[in-house]
Image 1 (cartoon, rainbow, N blue to C red):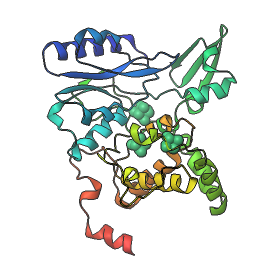
Image 2: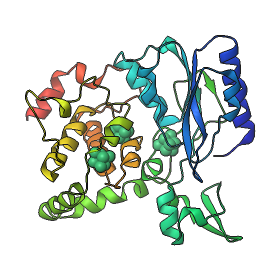
Image 3: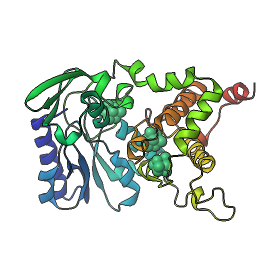
Image 4: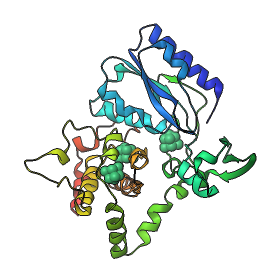
Length: 321
Ligand code: SF4
Ligand code: SF4
Ligand code: SF4
């Protein structure tokens, strides 16, 4: 996804927005301190915009910052991020007139953990990682190795339904069509669905025993925006603060229910998890259930009412039946 002309255009547009007073803040990405990483850049200083980057590692869903900032905001958004922005607007958390969406058509992000597994080496030993069409090229000690995107992109990117934002003010580059690898993006879920209920229960018990209840998954999620989360309630106390696996499971199930109809399959929760719990296997299942039962996909149609604020008699009949 690296394209220096596109990156320069982003820098120019962001700088102009700040200098002309059209926005108070720019939210984008700058290079991270570690190899092959980026970090959010939130600035009100036009001089900082030269640090903005667009590459295959712009993982964060920046819409998460929108409800926190005062004033008009220029925000860099990939397709999934733009869906989250639309969803926040639908939920009256953000006003459309308060955001300038700098849209980045996105051909998918490289999953460093997958790359490390493919080459059997740590990221520090890699010289370069690049994209060429449907290949990911890894340079290691001067030698190049090629992998298909189905091997090296994030699962949610393989299943991406909206790589080019539909809602935007400035489009940075040519539109990109949706992924043609949805089956690869669904592989882990399919494996879990093939398990017996007992085996699946044991799988999740084992995974959730590793949860340290840091809430990074919740904090990274733009759809999870309650001022006071149920996990912090003490009357009643829904969960014990000690991370027993049963309470960890209850936390994940409740979070999935809370974001049903708002989750855009952006993958941020799983990426944020420090112990690599495969959370997308839960969130994507909920996303698919919402799509099947309610024919609703978050942030796809800005005219649609938020899922949980209305009902239709036919769907109620279906659910009861
Ligand atoms: S889900 Fe789609 S828009 Fe989002 S990062 Fe992946 S490919 Fe890009
Ligand atoms: S990010 Fe991972 S470890 Fe932290 S609360 Fe979420 S599932 Fe648990
Ligand atoms: S639950 Fe996960 S995948 Fe869904 S919107 Fe939140 S961070 Fe993104």
